[in-house]
Each structure stands twice: as C-alpha cells, then as structure tokens.
Length: 536
Image 1 (cartoon, rainbow, N blue to C red):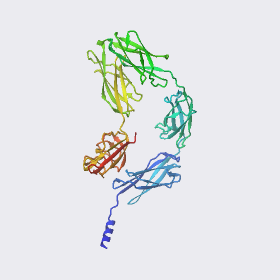
Image 2: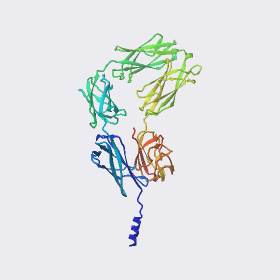
Image 3: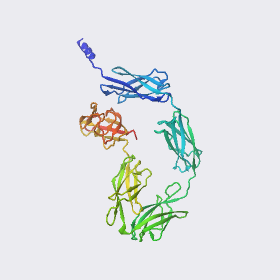
Image 4: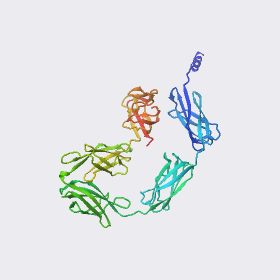
C-alpha cells in the first residue's frame, strides 16, 4: 500500500515541459483559389525544437481550403520543430487558422492569414529574338517569353514547351522552365532540317492562355573557311628566329576539317618553313616563317582544290636591339568554375636590351574559351611596366590566354586552369580515438559560401550530445557565442543543431563549420558526413 501511495505522490509532482506552440502565416496571396499563403507551426519544449510532433491545422472560413482540398490537414514537425502547409482562398480578407498539437498535453494556437482581392489577368507573351538559324543541330533560334499580371511581372511560374516540326528534328533547350524575377524565360531551339517549326508555350497548371510562335531554319552553307592566329610575333629579323602562325580549316558547321592540303604564299622578303602542309586532326597547321629585314609581312593560305583563301598580315620582325620583352607570370591558378573566383596573370613589358620598363602601353587580351571572360579586354602597363589580368569562368577547363601589344609585335600565351566547384561531397572515415568528437573534425577542405543553402546529413557510429543554445562544440568544449551566429567557422542563418539531417543557409563564408552536435565515439567507429549544396 505504501509503495502505491509513493508512486501517486511522485506522479502528481512530475513537472510538465514548458511548451511553446505558435502559428505564423505569410500574406499577400490573391483570393483566386490558386495562390497560397504558407502556414507554419513551430513547437518547442524547454527551449528545444520538437521533432516528429503531429500538428492538426483547420479553418472554418467558407471558401478557404488547404492544399489537400479540405479544411483540415495534418503535418509532422521536422528537426527544427516546424512544419508548413499551404492555404488558398476564394474570398479576400482574413482567414483564421487553428492549430492543435499534443506534447504531454493538448496545445492550441491560431493565426490570421490575409488574402488580397483578385488581381489582373495573367498574360503570357512571346518575342522571337533569333530566327532563320542554320539547321546544323547547334545554332539556335531563340524565343523570349514574358509573363505579366497587368503590368507586373509574374516570377516563379512554370511553363511547358512543345515543338511541332515535319521532320521531328527540332530540339528544345528545355521541356519546361520557371519564369525568373522579371517574369521572363528564354527558350532556344535547334534543328537538323531546314523547315518551319511551330513552338507553343503553356502554363503548367492552366493558369493562363498558351501562345504559339513560328520559327524558321535554313540550309547549312557547306563552304570551307580558313582562320588564323599569330602565336609568335615580333622576333628578330636575323633569318633564323621564327614567328609562327596557326591556320585552321573549318566546314560550314564551324567544325575542324582534317586532311586538307593548304598552300602558303608569302609576301616579299619573307621565308616560309613550308609551302604546302596538310591539316591535322584539329584541322590546323602551324607555319613558321623568318626574315632578314625588320618589317611587317603577310601570308596567304589557299585551300588546295577549292576557291578558298585567307590572308593574315602584321607578321612583324624587328631589329634585335629594338626588341621588347612581354612576359606573363601566373599569380593565382586553379580557380573555381563559379564565375566569381578567378585566375590572375601579371604581365611585364620591358626593353630586352636594357631591361628598362615600358609604361602606359596597351596589351590586348584574347581567350580561346567561349565561357571564360577577362576582367578587361585591354590592360595598360603602369609605371613599373606591369599590368594585371583576372580571368573568370563557369566551366572547369584549361584556358589559353593570349596577350598582344598594340601593334601585335609581341605576344605571350599562358595556360590557366579552372576546376569544378565542391558542391556535393561525402566525408567518410573512422574515429582516431575513443573520446568526444565534433563534426568539424570530419569536414575537411570544403568551402561554405555565403548565400548558399546546404543540407548536411550525418551518420555517426556513437552517442550524440548537444551543447546548449548559443553554444557550439569547439575542440572539446562547448563555446558560447552571442548575436545568433557563432563567430568561428562558417556562419549560418539558424542555430547549428540537427539530428541526422539539417538544412542551413550560409551567411558567412568559411572552410569548416562548428555545430551544437557532438558525439562520443570509440576508436575505429565509422562516420559519414554528406554536404549537399542545394543552391547548385
């Protein structure tokens, strides 16, 4: 009997958790039974986010319903203690939404969600920006679509595209797409047959009327062309030193043609390494030439058996004593292909004989890439004869940077490298010792970038512990921070705490990150930490 009484006393004195249950709502959706406001429930107990709590949302307002078409809907909270549902309405004004959850006892909350009067009709228009492209399967026609509600752009709406062609060879750059912040979308179309193609664009959810456009493709010109590039220029007029010219033969699709015989005709007083040469697998021939007189010369290349010729001029030879020197030094290489990081080259222009610097001289820049772009097409040497160039890219590739003085008497070629950005990576291994370990020990050589959203998935063989709010685990200690964002490692927009999987937006760049999570692991225990860049 005494044991039963003690149990009842114990149960009656048990402290209930301090539960915070709130509802919030976005606002501004139109009362068209299509646009939605987002209703978010947040559940915390004793200051901790509650995971896996069932929340029942309901409304009794006529004309309002959730995404399931009903006036009630259930959702389960995530690792941040939140869950979100979508609400739409046929009538404008405030729609009251109630929420109910069970955390030791029943908790209720409510919020008003505001819907606006129906707006103007959404209209999709199109403009053919590029037409009559070659039917080579590469060159594209282009249509630009614009979606507006009255005069206001409508972003974030999905369009679907269809191409109708007699041959069936028309290809779209995308089967569907989402309008950008200006309510626009750009669609490219290629074809391998000369014909007229009908392209239609429609709403993915039948929100507005579709539009149709006619575009045309024309026959491909099969004539050959010859191009050239002076790769070495401004050498000494000593009859031995060689300038070099790269010739390339292209077909009507701008593709290299191998096995073509070229004949070369020099201008007066210019000596050639060869007078005939056959193009290699890249459709190219590199020709050397020399001279005894300081001057500018030209070479005419003739495609044997075809009525195609090409002349390149400004092949310059100078007296040895007058030679200048253009040198390039790579200051920064192997940049990321994100269009922000860069490779850097420093050029120096001097007199070869005296080593005196040459200031205020223009250096022209050319790249052999269609995606890479320089900080400037023309750079000018400073008082020290130095000019610095930065090159950006969105593709991981090698790029040849060619620099020329204004009269093309000097040139310098430099090869720089762009590498793929570390977007999605998984780090695996085993614990080095039996002790507590922070997640930062497992994440190495990863560059968190401000403005990007990352998903982190941790599978750790061991027991998980968490520092209190406003603390992160740093080198064996829970370290306090103020202001909402830890001052060590990369900064994120929400508290550094998750169980299994967490999603964070980076607000301060860094190469490692510290979290509230830490683990007690035995030596040799396995871990796997995956980082997914959701902004990629």
